[in-house]
Length: 330
Image 1 (cartoon, one colour):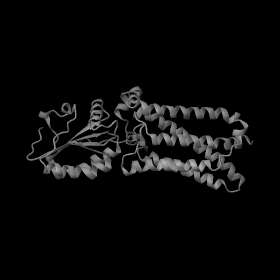
Image 2 (cartoon, one colour; image 1 turned 90 degrees about the vertical axis):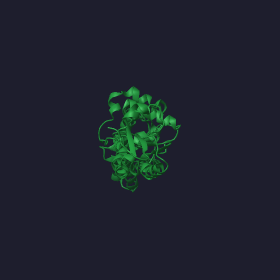
Image 3 (cartoon, one colour; image 1 turned 90 degrees about the horizontal axis):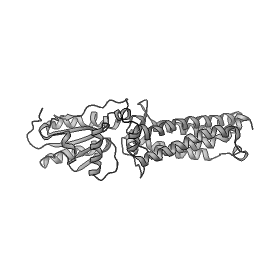
Image 4 (cartoon, one colour; image 1 turned 120 degrees about the horizontal axis):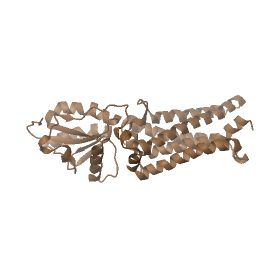
């Protein structure tokens, strides 16, 4: 089916993932009104980055703009690109209007794009993007294998593995030291260190929550690809609650238990030490699970997420001496 249009046409390419909630927002909320308004004068092709050919084309597009990595949704219009469910709704309508006023915008010059949309088969009337279905595994995560996922970012994923090994060693070491903790360490009082680490963790978890709920790009730094992690299905617990919110709840509960446990009450002190240790243990176990997913399932690592994992593991170690004293009544 050939798109029959008269007058200028704006053509764009949208890179998306079927399990990305930001992509879902753009496709179901942002694009339909524009498609209804402009009809065949707006033609968009959707490229699924979870498929091998789509991933290859996406990496080629990133290199075209001098980007080492990037997240989805990633929209290319002519020589401009827009990223995320905040920037695309804000700027895409103006780009369409400007393009139509200046004679239209052809497909972007991306090597390999012609194989996706041969010139004689431009069929996008008005949009050829399936609505993403949330709550299922990424296709490539099931078929590509852990080695392929890890190879997408060996530096960032290697750092994630380093953190993962450290957390696993911490748990293993804690089991041994729980009975044989040296005297000095057994009598260590973490004091104000626990709320300090919790406040730092709250800042990290709060930022991740902001990124997820406000649909903005994360500031990733030189290592990893936070946006790919935040736009994966694993960024939400059971597909509903952002993991960042869960982290904020955990850090807040630890602070509250520590605060009320500071009051002079022997029974409260006993409950405080064991409660903090229990919550830190659960938080560390959950952090191990999330850190494992990053390099081996998602294929990308998030520095903010790794920082939260390190903070939770530190809280685990800070809570260990007091918990040992309570368990063995030293």
